[in-house]
Image (cartoon, rainbow, N blue to C red; front, top):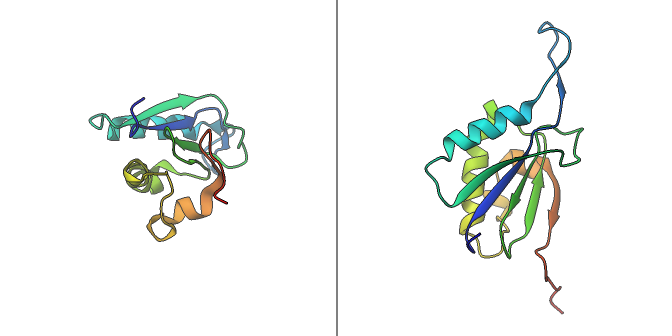
Length: 129
């Protein structure tokens, strides 16, 4: 992974109950999100989309982790492919342009502001004194 490479890990395990009137059972919204992101970012060599099994945020499908070397990692839930695809792509690009992975609050789309599950410091991080 180069220093500016970004990976979007997308949970493909989360199940979501089908809306009323669309039958019984569940769908897998993360599969749809991962496929849409892979198609949208196919020409962008700086961002990789990697489907993963269970990010342990089952009550907030779809969930993704925004990861890069020496940057803070974001775990974002409650994402919807139809509503948030453009926001996710732009946020991944902003994340890649940052030096530390922190996207300024005002530049984060609403789905990221409301969907943040966690922000994790990079390995080797030490709090400034």
